[in-house]
Length: 180
Image 1 (tube, rainbow, N blue to C red):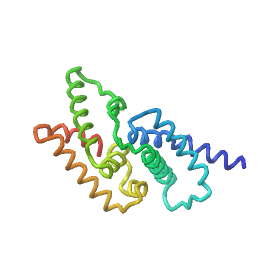
Image 2: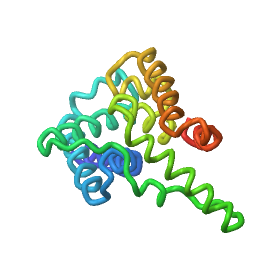
Image 3: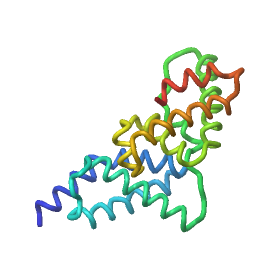
Image 4: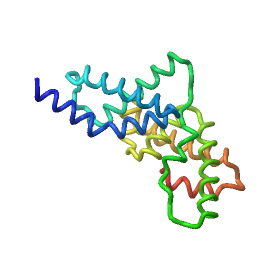
């Protein structure tokens, strides 16, 4: 019994940040992300005995987080996958204030375009780009084939470039490196 408790505590400590960050990107709300993170770990703890080790613990837990968030939004019938406050999470780079302001404006533009992507594309961009999961991990989390992850990511990035517009193509390319 104590050994199980220790394993579950270790899972929580190891994956809390990943789950919270994913859910924060998904919900656009730190309070909801905290609540959903707790719900996710309650589901993890309840179903840990059924974990079959067919994927990594990380992808299994993130897939539970994804289903928890989807269930939450089905209940509320809201869809908001990418936060406006994402900018606040980015680490500030040392530089001149004018350069920082320009980078922030470019990022806000990319962020606004991301929020217009359909949910499948946003999810892939969040997981592959922002969270930097591999194609395989992303496919496991989204319960789809790696080829779908690759196609959705490619299409999402192309739509992102179109949404930002040709005059701001450089901004997308600069930020694409940050999110790929």
